[in-house]
Length: 180
Length: 167
Image 1 (cartoon, each protein chain N blue to C red):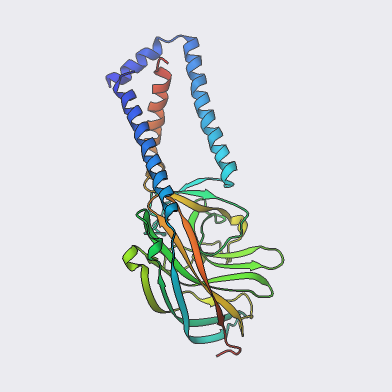
Image 2: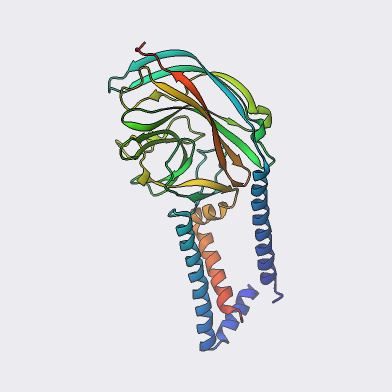
């Protein structure tokens, strides 16, 4: 706790100009993070270029806490691809594999059915009432790469929000109180 | 500059960078693997072939699927997901892909296999186009790595045909 006391002391000893400089540096860091995020969205063509696996429905391939890199291209959707999709009325996107595809001759639109590798049945139970197929507009991206365990940070922060506040609070304090 | 917090921060950033680099290199090493898989599929029996009350055709098959996928495994491979899809064309649909069977190969020892199975998922058409239909049976596989880029490929086996009448 002496460390927190030191930080608060150094905060009090700063003048206005130093405080403003620190605030601007903080703002720059946040803005660059935002720029990187937006550029990612442009490059990968998907709304969220990275997702965290939240359920066990794709085990043993994807465990809870893994992160998936997404990409969305104009290529047609084919069976076997692992897609991330949103169901109307559900906020959490689902990551499952495409098992059936029916593509129209004239319009090129597709009807898609998905299933989690570890689930006994297909995803019709998860779709909105009366919905039998997924269409291209539901699909946010295809999984192209994968990193294990890294997503646990996000899961912890979502399930125990107190950790999020403690982390951001101490980071903010560290940044403002540092003399450089 | 030499406080515990700064040192811990520097250490953490460095170790994360090194880890990320190692994961990327592991993924790149997969590109040096040139796989040569083989497979063979036979339709042993058409169990039944009906038109459902809603107008769509449905067929149930018994299949014999055998394959050697050992060359797909590298040290960075966690598992290979393999599935067999029936692919065909109809007047309304340019492409139909229906997965009939799938399995997970957890390691190289299991990558040579031959199984005798009923179609695991229902082979249902959108419409009534399956009588006398020519179709391909394609064995798809999806290599899921321990870290990094996933890859997929397939072998297309042509020459299958459904009967001209329901049974």
